[in-house]
Length: 242
Ligand code: NAP
Image (tube, rainbow, N blue to C red; front, side):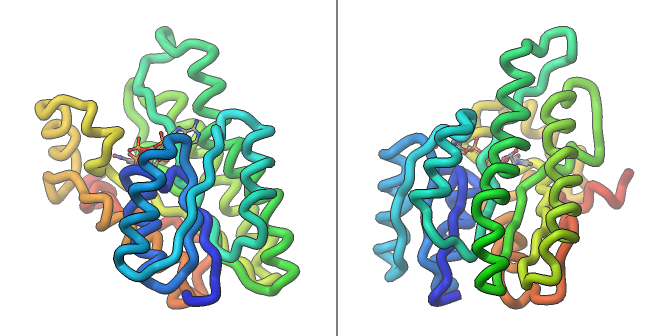
């Protein structure tokens, strides 16, 4: 991927961090996006120590103006990984309007605005790859996943639309739908909850972020040159057991 610039949103932690590191290993110049400058500096340092190239850009993706600023500061982007996300598991009766808006703004609207801002440039240059990080919970719903599942289901639907819109311009758009993955976000859960979630997979374990990142890096790369509009589930065989 040398000569390509990759923007990874939420690249400061968890799955995004692992993706940023792998894309840099593949030779891409990586823009690590996040809110936390200290976390950002640490990912950039890790990439540079391994001989890669990276820089950090800060933006709050719950704020549409900040999303726009991020797109402008990023410049020409060849690979866009829409990874930053929020997941609060609450029954509808306890979901506040503010949390509803946060899920839609961060998980759905920010990717929409970034694709709107950056995909036309990719199309003009005749190449580009976008990977949107969804969740298995978009397809396999259960009590309390309400707004999280819905915001990611909307993202998956948009992914298909973008795949159709940009296919002839040489821009591919795909989804990776992870199952439960060990990240700073899920570290907040207690061990019993994590074990219960792990037991919902056929493999009966949660993923490491690097395992999810492998799928993202593959779809982002030219190795996936004939794949667009796909949903790749990285979920320990969860779909195999219903
Ligand atoms: P995480 O550990 O909670 O980290 C979240 C990342 O998103 C951080 O880099 C954070 O930046 C960034 N972020 C959060 N709110 C933001 C905001 N308002 N503006 C800009 N950046 C923001 O996340 P994760 O568990 O790796 O999840 C990454 C993606 O995978 C999410 O889209 C999630 O829905 C999806 N996913 C996760 C799992 C799982 O089990 N972990 C399963 C399925 C899908 P800062 O560091 O600056 O805060």
